[in-house]
Length: 319
Ligand code: SF4
Ligand code: SF4
Image 1 (cartoon, rainbow, N blue to C red):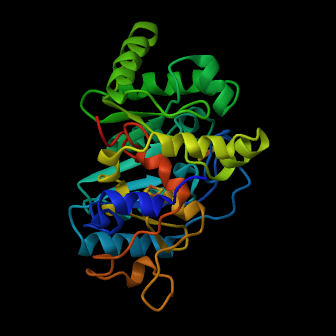
Image 2 (cartoon, rainbow, N blue to C red; image 1 turned 90 degrees about the horizontal axis):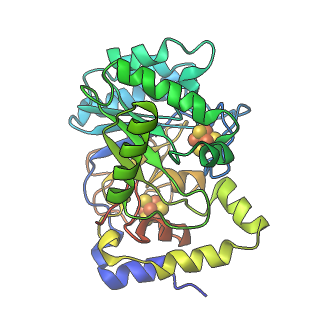
């Protein structure tokens, strides 16, 4: 039996359960994706039907206009596959000092998407690319045959456009199984060495992210009878320092319909942020004080954010 995450967090500091201040607006453009990864927590695929439209994108631009200096973090699915992806990028131009695009990289090597790398450069998007390992076999096992080679081809192209030098290019590592990432610092050094030596590729930062036991990854854990063991392992590696830095204290996540969540994991679990009367909150109605002092909706999957060095959309939380 694993102690409730909420109790564990409160025991460290009751304040950690409360939203602090907004730094990052994460928007999920939907569950359409060209890949079908084993660890996917949003169950994305080519058959995805939840796709953000221009109405919600306009509300996001409106929110950013009223709240300057936020980081805009664009995710999916494969966000570039949203038919109105370019509309969002153009509507939010100049509204957020940092606009991060979470890309699976492989999409940029597909026929019909040749415009994408140059478009990202032109709009000065920060690219956060998934590359769960520097070794081909590990990537292809997790993401599908041929994905590693496509990712390498795209990283070389991005380098030639100035990504990794003048423009920020970050990579994301996540474990190929039911374990917690090792040291982000150490792994970043290894990635840099291997990618440079083998492919001449350079990048800015590596983010290590722990697999949350939800979505397709939870199905995998359950099918191998290792779900409870994984949760126990995460709880056993609980790090109070990481607990004080969980990303949901400074981030909100918006779904394709405009509903607000504490993070993308809660979004996948359909655990929205609610008003005092229990109604769901949408981005068009979120006012300045809308999140301040609000309790974060916590559950057992949250142990993936506090295990080891901790985990967030921008990597480890404690060194
Ligand atoms: S993990 Fe990312 S790239 Fe893979 S299927 Fe899910 S959304 Fe697509
Ligand atoms: S899973 Fe989401 S709500 Fe839970 S601790 Fe992590 S960021 Fe916060």
